[in-house]
Length: 483
Picture (cartoon, rainbow, N blue to C red):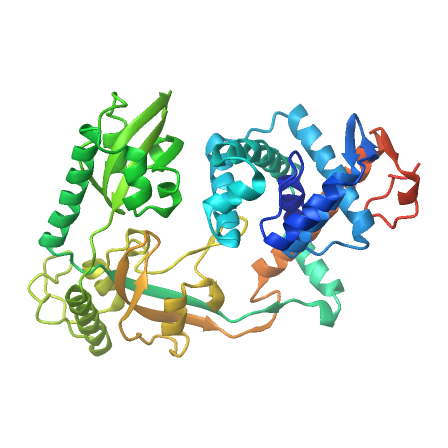
């Protein structure tokens, strides 16, 4: 399907312009053996050559990534590299744009994964025989091409639409054993409340940051060294606190206001509080509306006592909702728009008065799920919910309120919460009445896959192709390679 095609191209793209080493010890020996093989050109697509070493390294990378190839890997791997070249060439012709932030994010995620597999930054550098700056530089071009290919594919399928009549016709012709199974889906409302942090703990964190600033100003230590040692932002700490060129809108507003006010790279900012914690910032460079900075993040520790108080507060709110009676602590302020006291207390009232989550508070606490195509839905499979939420709502009946529970929010902070099961649809075979969107997406995916397949076949016809004779008997996914 379309999503599987994208997944295969992601792996191909990572190795399209560079030969990434494998990052586990037994694979290093295999890679060394590949290097000893006399290389040769096995395919030519347009004016681009595909080497035997390209195929062998991609085969090893695929084994590490758990990728299964359609058909014989000896045939499928060079074919996928060739298809990648077709997309990339068209992306260049069509001026498909890729932002620096997209590339940086992809590179850093890949490096983080390498480090987690092999154990440390130093071991990655040892296996690559390069320092981290050189590894990043090599990966950037590879990820740029990956994003260009993805952008070209999305451009080709962006105008594909389906009508309700087409969906109904598709379902009518679909064999019973091919009708997709829709897993159990739920809608969940949630109230989250942050435990209150004691002022002494906030003062402790600020004093630490003042000490770092003092040590930097006195020349006793560099900002980047202190960031590596003490910053609680794992993504940037290993880079000495460095955040690559980023637009103002991508930052927390408080952080952005201070960062964009800096003008002297030698100066350390004042302490700034964001939704993530407390920071000090140092300017590296500015380019138009983008800024490159270093920062050190410190997060105040939430005490057990504060957590217990927040849990008790959530328990009180949950009891009030179940009983329908506002607790004494909110009776004086709980009024309707006309100023009249309200006797009935609902979950929605609890959201308005107590929830700290701005993303759900304006939707009466209803959680939203962002799907693969970036659309929003209130329906979740249980596996798509945060684990703590799924555990809390799974045993509930529709309309019931959970017991209080703790969870980590998207910003890495402990919150206490209660949840309500708004609706539950048990797993079943899809029907046009209840699961139109599921079936529509299935039709769209098939049409997109067909569109991409036909585009590749037509590009092959108009592109110079020469392949080694030993590949002529391959059962290729795309017709037209052998002439």
